[in-house]
Image (cartoon, rainbow, N blue to C red; front, side, top):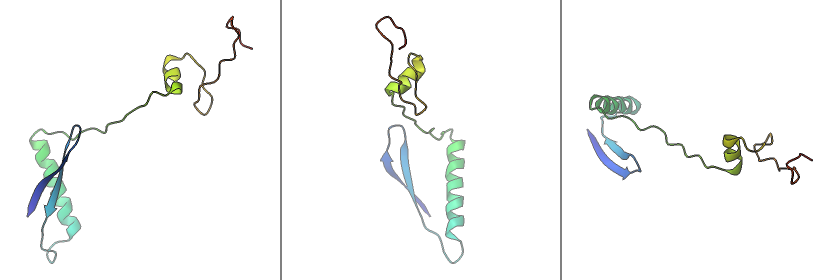
Length: 92
């Protein structure tokens, strides 16, 4: 027997927990879990429900912005290299 429970509502997901009961004398628990996960994935596929992609958040640090704009030099560690030019724009 499988009882699905809505565990939480994420930003773009509905996270579900499933409680499983099986006769442990007849089946290995890992085999039952494997079959349950495959059945859920198969049903989601059949109903046209796609699994969400991982969400990656990038923080625009000064060195990240400089690398994108190519308006500053970066050190090997990825920091912005200090500008050492004079008021005429000539490197010192």
